[in-house]
Image: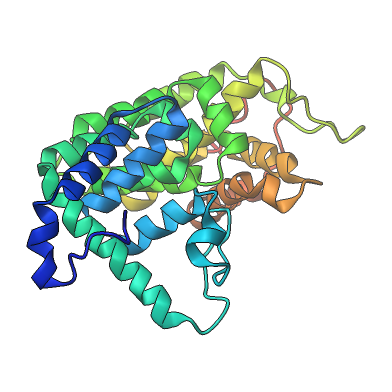
Length: 327
């Protein structure tokens, strides 16, 4: 379809726009955009709609080819395309740059043909179909992209973050299986800070305090005798939830330290959280724990920046960790 519309040729553009072929193409595309058979498919369609509405031909072409089983047919085997869309964009394997440019132009023509077919609010609603906690568990980066492109309201973004971070089981899934969760958390804070006052974060100090009191922290601490950590007991979901919440709250604190809604990092069990993250990545393949390693690095960097003395404190052996603020 991207190859077909000769919109780049002004002499043929109007002829095609009014043709039966154009109507057939639009009918086909519209039926696909309205179809939602799974969370994964909803995420895919959300990104398709976002790229069409923004006329982002490069990202549209990349998304379509990466998710197509006809990659070799489309590109005649001349271009090396990675299967992971979070990796760098595919690079030309030969010097066929001119042909690649033509293909990008074809996708741009397709975007210019399709984008006027719906009003901006209709495209935005299609993009918002990927703005859900379920979609977040499927593809974090797709949700982040939807957050940036769909002009969601403040309430819609708040509900997404709240429904995610208040669900311990969902937090556990994101912590272990989604590499882009840190990007989601930092983008959520950045979008919050673009608003006018008052900027109230989803995670409050009292919320973190209550969550901490529900975690049996001595079971979170490494047993140095057998170098093991129980990751299967009922506290594990809450540990993951605490780590994601504290990263969100800490990033907010890092941006606006004097906010009335900012946390006091010295009052939180940061050494326990860091040790938990560190143990989760030890002995694992980098690709399997990349997301956790990013979270650990961010939390460690913020701790060193704002309360480095905590890094020198021993792990607490009590149920409720010591309040470093009092120290």
